[in-house]
Length: 203
Image (cartoon, rainbow, N blue to C red):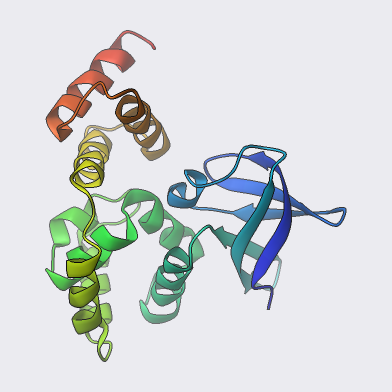
């Protein structure tokens, strides 16, 4: 099992990155949550990995934090019908803390808004993860200690709203992040309005 890569970031897209490790280039599939944390191209990087072995390919999935990889493995190993691709979509659509809170609170509505997840899959995620011994209790404690910041909550609400309106997850995520970095909007409603205005103007 390849557990991490220590090398130089060669290229990065919202869905994948290439890391040069001693002259060997590794293609790694990543969620948006990890894309946000990548260093600039050409800089050193250590990325945690999960190797998925299939009959026709060996695929590497990468994560910038242990929490992201842990959640990815929990989904792939414990929820029927969820493979690596859908697990990445979950991480791209919602922060780890917000996901844990949604499971603990049986928030089907929030989970089902994630791109690629329907209501039935969201219900199955909650059912199968809540049944794990100690998971719900541990997550409730973790949620209380590491609650997402108000800014993160507003960004997540805005992205989910934009996805519901038909925008692609990657585009919505990038647009909301850009606005927050410029300090142009605070609430989810303001973020959504500004993104819609910008996209209508073709910017």
